[in-house]
Length: 272
Image 1 (cartoon, rainbow, N blue to C red):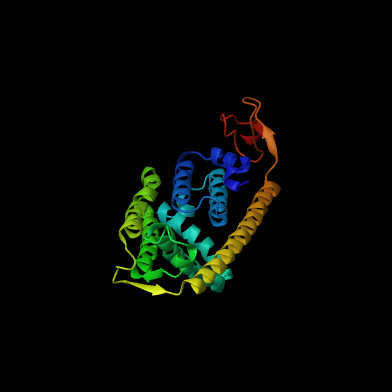
Image 2: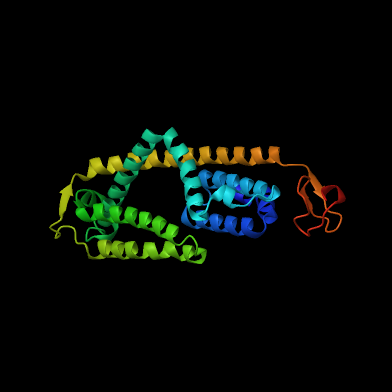
C-alpha cells in the first residue's frame, strides 16, 4: 500500500491546522498533479515535509522558520534534493535507460506506421518488414513529446498558487502532441515523402524486440525496488508512531504528546 494512502499519513494531515494545513495541501497538490503520485521520491518528500510541519505546529514555531518566505521554492527544492540523491546513485544507468527508451520509441513509431497506418498495412509480414522507412518526423515527434513534458512541469511551477488549474494542465499539453500524431499516421505517406528513407527491417525488428524485453525487465525490477522502498518507508513510520491516547470527549485517538485533541480541541489537565 502507498504511504500516502496509509492511516498514519492521513491522520498526520488531519492534525495540521491553519497555515500549516494550507501550505501542506498546496505542496501535496503540486507534487501529485505534476509528477507521479506513486513514486518513492514523492512519498518520502511528503513524509519529511509532513513531519516537519507537525513538529513546527507542536512547538508553535512560525512556518517561515522552516519554509522561508516562499513555499513554492521550498517545495521545489525539497523534491529536487530527493531526486538528486536518487540520480547520483544510478547516473550511468539512467543515461543508458534514457537512450534505450529513445531508440525504442523511434522504432515503435517506424514499425507502427508501416504495419498499421501506411498503404502496406494489408500486405504480408514479409512485405511490410521490407518496407520500413525512417523519416525526420519520428525524431521530431519524440523531441516534441519530451519538450511538452518539460513545458508542463515548468507551467505547473508557474501555477503553483493556483492548484485547481494543475489538473487540466496535463490535458492541455497532450493536445498538440495528439494532433501531430494524428497527422503523422494519417497524412504521412512513406514512399512518397522526400524525408523518408527505406531502412533494413529485419535487423531493426530484432533490435526492437531486444529493447522491448530489456525495458520490460527494467520496469519490473524498478517496480520491485520501488515497492520495497515504499514498504520500508511505511514500516519506518509504523515503528516511529508515538503512543496513542483516547480523547474522553470525542473518543478519537491521537498522539500522546499532542497538546490537545486535534479532532475536537479538548485539552487534558496534564497538557494545560
